[in-house]
Image 1: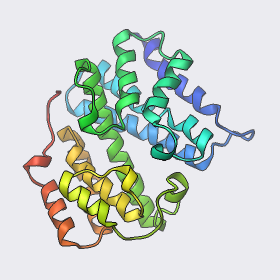
Image 2 (image 1 turned 180 degrees about the horizontal axis):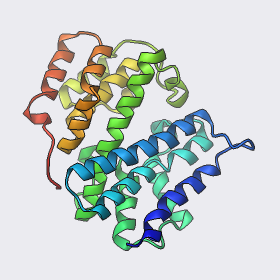
Image 3 (image 1 turned 30 degrees about the vertical axis):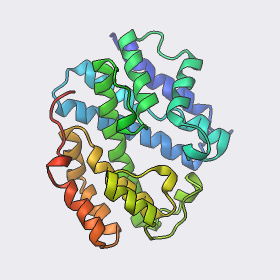
Image 4 (image 1 turned 90 degrees about the vertical axis):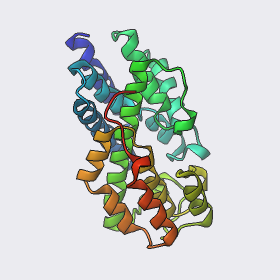
Length: 265
């Protein structure tokens, strides 16, 4: 992998995003958030891979996978004005289709193209739904990106909730209202499965409960360390009501079931 190959995904990404700018060079607010999110996920991914003592090439590729993971969000929002996959389209699959339509990554090695494609297509799937036969290198980068993505979304949402109650959330996910309450379906699901289905989300607090459940799904210990350094666990707990049922959920997050891995899969 030479320097030309390494730089091409980042160059391609900025050229791709530029298509969604208006005549003044501005992106819609929601897409500017996504562009910034992709840049931060790339940085998180490099940090996690680095703390796992991976070689420079794998650290760099982790960053590229993180940068491109949400490429499907741009055509999704342009087409539907929403990031709600349930009502529009699976943005992971759309992202993969976009890369294929663009002929992306012809200069990259087959292994690197496959890793990026897997990170794009599967980063938003439930753990139980991930393919069982992914190449080892692709699985590693996918798991790094999934952790990196969760950490940034947690940080972004918590900052927005603290600032203004996440007033932009209904614009991006129209099925979710600004209410600060937890609906019974979400509470029942998270206590039973430690996950929340997007289709059940109705309120901001439902969304926060779903994000809280992600602590169970952080794969690598360096990701949990990043979350702890940024106090994400404590911050999300303070935003939710003090319900006994939620206490059980949060206590479980601190136990051995939630411990992350320090090695590659």
